[in-house]
Length: 317
Image 1 (cartoon, rainbow, N blue to C red):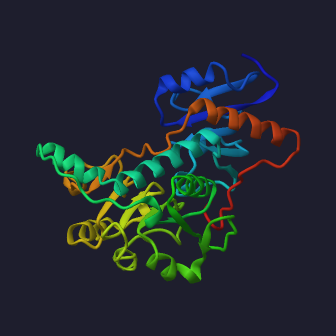
Image 2 (cartoon, rainbow, N blue to C red):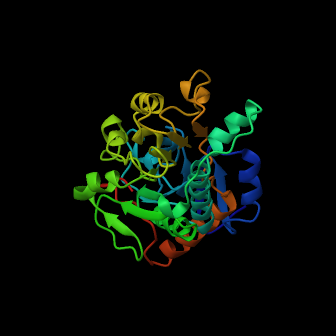
């Protein structure tokens, strides 16, 4: 199909049928090329929508102007060797935000209401009621106060939890006490359930380590702290995490992200009864919503209007 509009390359490691279904109603009037077709000439593409793109993308598409991330994170782009100095746009969408905050609320409630312990009792055919506090007696500390963190905080507040937040730089959020870099220890000492929603940057890599876990509140209503991570696997030191879960430093965890994904079949995390594992599915991308977002941002770009959610490469998000 010929078109006067600049072309778009798609390099998404998603299910092909989801991509095809979304493309049937997206980006009208533009030539859309799939990078998965190695015979496809991508040289006319000015835009690319990527998720874990192939290393040869920039050789095949040398005239790109803008990269659109296929997910909320952009570390999969920023770690590409010899990345050209292109504008990078994050995917921010209500569907992505809602899915993440639903997952965070689900995990907090699961640990509040003893779901891992009851699941273990079910396997043992054991009928025994366990003590469980009210949400108002538990403080959830969220590390990462971007769009996802703010929405999760609001929904946890609605469920009755006491919620506090931490970010690298100070944030002002109505109804939420917040801390910045200088207040990290104070934030951790008050936290019963720690929620990680941090992007992966040089500052956040390996931030969840033994030292941090030991600073969490130990005398709270849950009987010990819980760690929930749906940010990036590279932010957690898994050796320290396994040790903390084994020796009681952490009472439990919910993990959606890991240092190596898919999580290897021989990983000891699989066998821990106090851990809930999901396969990096806390906030799966709706490809239709992604392409609507891309179309809106391209329209702004071509109308000489500022695009939204542009990545600051100096901070990594």
